[in-house]
Image (cartoon, rainbow, N blue to C red; front, side):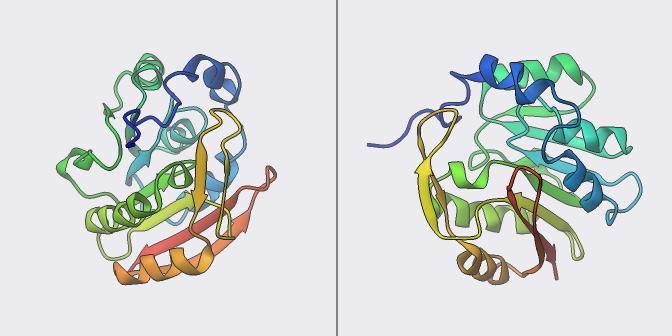
Amino acid sequence: MANSDKSNGYDEIAAIFISGRGRNHSGVGASVVTDWSQKLPDRATVLDLGCGNGVPISQALIERGFNVYGVDASARMVAAFRASFPTVPVECAAVEDSDFFGRTFDGVVAWGLFFLLDAEVQRRLIAKVAAVLPSGGRLLFTAPSESCSWADAMTGRTSISLGYEAYRKALEAEGMSLVGTRLDEGENHYYFAQKT
């Protein structure tokens, strides 16, 4: 049976999420995203996929002077995003259904999103992201380095990591190079890719 909740359970637990991670402006991930963004051009346009309420990832990018756009499938998260960042374009849609504002971006961030999606949706998302990045455009996403599945700590739903090798191959198939990986203080695994 298909999952009809495109937010993968996050709309239902939005208030819990926002009261924890969604209020921590220097939360896990913000420093890695800030470091990554230093390779983007000044005033770059960045798409935050699975942006949630915008804290801390979108906020870190906005504070650096980037033109941020957000997409999230949770109506409650998008409402909170709009309340905090009323001038930032944000769309309430599943990433697989969004047209990404019909534009290209210098960078795309997908923190804590990929592994919430089915394996085939993850592969299609890599293709969609590659299509909106120009040559030299950058992608940052998080997922475990090993191929595995587990129950999401917040929603209890199944999460899936394709693993390092499968992500590398999927990126290369779409004209992107995996240029690095990293762990943060919360032991989140980051993939850094660049469009060739």
